Image (tube, rainbow, N blue to C red; front, side, top):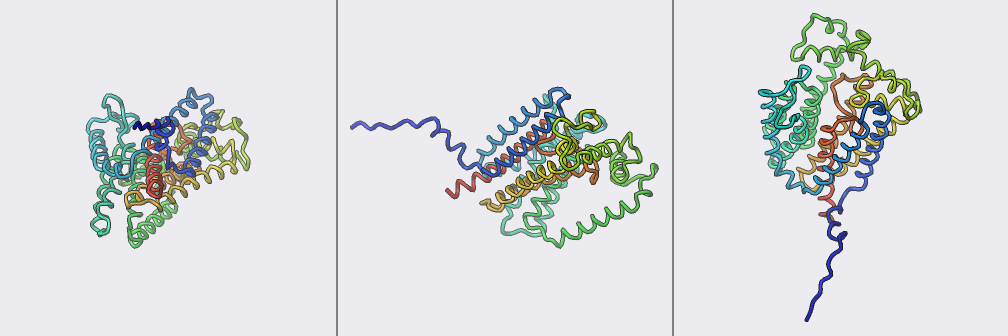
Length: 384
């Protein structure tokens, strides 16, 4: 008796790879990526090959997203400790043998020049989520203290380079994991109250604390200048305050509907410094106005809302903590970037996701979204 088996088609063989992708999340990513490409075409029109390179970086991030999305969360959890140890070891190597540029030691030559702090944006939340997964059902105060120590080591090393922007991003992702793990509001509220009181006191005493001969503890001189420039950018309008002033002028000149695509005068007359990187939101605001800004913000809100929904439905504590931390890291990126360009936060060099130019930042973005998609896929496959 002859038994014949029908050979599966190519689509039948590769179909499992595409099953489980979260449709709303893909839609949010494509929407923001389109906004980023449109903005980069205008802002980088006379800036070499920035538009083409930005598209290449997006394709690289998409490829990384696709590959990482195939890795189940359990496998990602097994990588947490090695990645964290490697990341901290590289940060120590930067401290000892790092390359210094413009007064900052952030890079390491390992055959190619890398910036190890970028790795910690993913490694830190992975490590903390792994730790809390191990302690699930028996969390005590010492467990949160241990998590704080695991977070403090890389944040301290990054801040020492100095790289305040990356330190803030790594700190925020770690704090999000600790918060979602169940940190008591009794510990959170006092910190928030002290922070608010410190900001009020800083604003009230601006004329005193920003005297040239006054030293600030724990902060370098350039960091002091950034805070003082935020409080009053007109003190040095052609120097340290130039970025903030030009950013606010561009945002304000956009009005309700903007000047139109490719018609931003502040952008194309090169008044906006770093118009394709940190200050690209100013170029976007000038050309698309308040309505365009609302649309971009709503795109990020939709992405964050969908990410939090994935976190709420995740099957394990590790997956919930990772999804929640990665999702809120997008909020941190967008809020800090828009805030510093608008003049409500100090300039700390944080890119706007999908929009700002930068290969390393785009790779990190692809990794984060790939992990989020992996968690979404695991939930859908378990349900089916």
